[in-house]
Length: 61
Image (tube, rainbow, N blue to C red):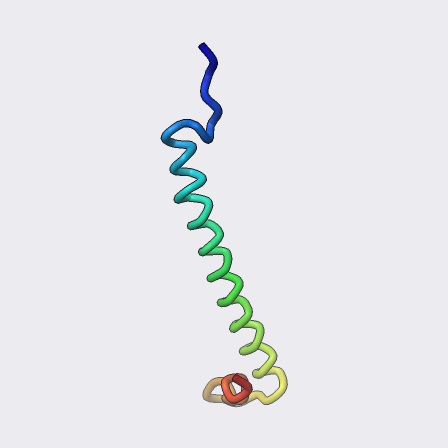
């Protein structure tokens, strides 16, 4: 009798069907958030304003 491969086990199936997609989704979300942060930092460098972002970042969309 052979030992099942990881993907053939209940835990393995859950890992590949649930955990890996969740990791991918969170990485995508993190990338989006970092992109917004970069826009905000660049906007503040170009036009510093005392009460927050100049608003031009949002006008580009």
